[in-house]
Length: 297
Image 1: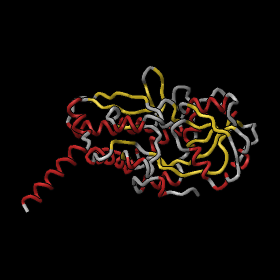
Image 2: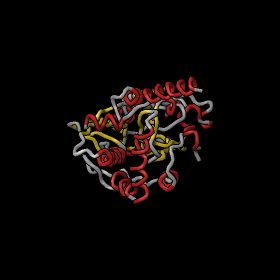
Image 3: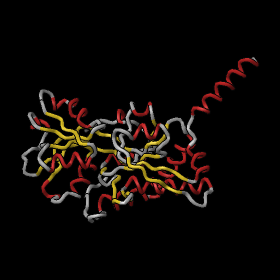
Image 4: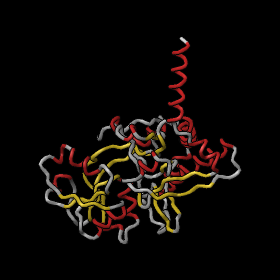
């Protein structure tokens, strides 16, 4: 019995060593690193000079103020680290980024490597085209060039869609969402397939927003969430509790209105996108379910 208890204690010690402890890291250093995106629509984007803004950026800033209070820190330095679709997960895993506040889909595969906070936005993947292109559906993409961002799953989602059976198109890749939109804007791509909010945000900041429109069927329904390290239950609870308090108070709806329904910097343009039914449901019944629990309607 004694040997069994000693073996169990040793196992628990190994487990605890393997667990991340972001709260301890933040308390000891007085600093935290937030992963942000340069061009993820109104979710997370750069204002230049190392400054970032957006719906997820502000949610995370509020979460970190809650963490600061919880830890009793007089001050907390927040560092902003630009991440891409390719490096965001590794940077969270290796501790470079403590909390990733961009446009990351919570899915079953990613849950093996990282954890996600409760869902703050349920996205619908569609496609953006030039308004005068005549393109309105997936069926018209045969022989066309379709842009997407390296490290994302949107084109794979398109290829798997039953409506895309028998359709052949060429993929062209942008290194980030702004680059992918530029492929569409410059005529090097006929369509840009991506999360609707990212499409809408990039269109809103285009030189001539009226030149573009979002069209076609919903390709997938994806919960977008703030990403943190795996096996760090204390930090996940702190993040979730703060977000759920915003949901309960109605503050998250106010933040949505601020970033999606009102003019936003730097050009003071308006995205003009109301929260969809799935997003409203995620606010009323907070959860961290992966994409596989959803289905396109």
